Amino acid sequence: MQVRPRRSVLYMPGSNTRALEKAKSIAADALILDLEDAVAPDAKAEARNNVCTAVKSGGYGRRELVIRVNALDTEWGVDDLAAACDAAPDAILVPKVSHPGDVTSAAKILTARQVPQKTRLWAMVETPHAILNAREIAALGADPESRLTCFVLGTNDLLKESRARANNNRFAVVPWLAITLVAARAYRIDVLDGVYNDFRNEAGLRDECEHGRTLGMDGKTLIHPGQVGPCNEVFSPTNDEVEWSRQIIAAFAEPENANKGVITVDGKMVELLHMVMAKRVVAIAEAIAASEAA
Image (tube, rainbow, N blue to C red; front, side, top):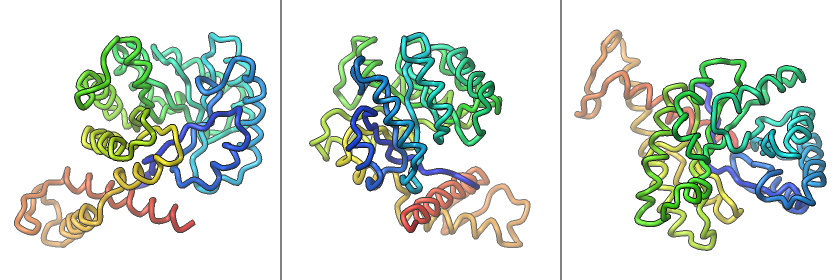
């Protein structure tokens, strides 16, 4: 099983060249080099050049590089997407996705420009329409030509649009997260939780990371380098989880358990579905260890 850890995904403003350089030493699994919300209108062109130059120049090691472009219906969107295609990052993040056509349009441009298949598409889920259309958008993941790999929750935008309050353990947000998760999992798409705004509050961040992991998130988007360490810790499988997963895999590999759907491991009933889950835990743990050793 091949997986790519996406525990910590840090937004970096494309207009800040010092931040883009510093990102080369930050232990995030992925970096979103941002041309959209983090960049003022009069700095859009400069940010585009900064980001694409940074991607082409390399030096980011094992970190997954993602360029967030402006929406295609803005005055910067078409130029952003064209430049991002030429830079060929690991992924291009499409903002304000509300309908399947928003992803399909971007995918067609990537195909027309003969962008290498390694460049995938991520989609921001940050509008009420995106939640209502989550299943239809996620279904694009079944089509290789869509390149759709990951959903990114834009919880701040969803709160704004819904007029909900961000308190009580995200009570208002949970339904949106759950809808997105179930739709994504139906089509094998990863999902990243939204940002935690109080970047100096590590305890609060850890609580929200635990909350997201419990819901099933693959990782979390972040706004400050100081959030990376705690986020990596929470979204990494624990030693106990890895050891238990290895026990399950080893038990099913025993000759006497061949073709069995249910076995007993350490006094607990274990089904084949648990072995599938165990293989993913081990694969994630091994991928994390390999990336940290690189």
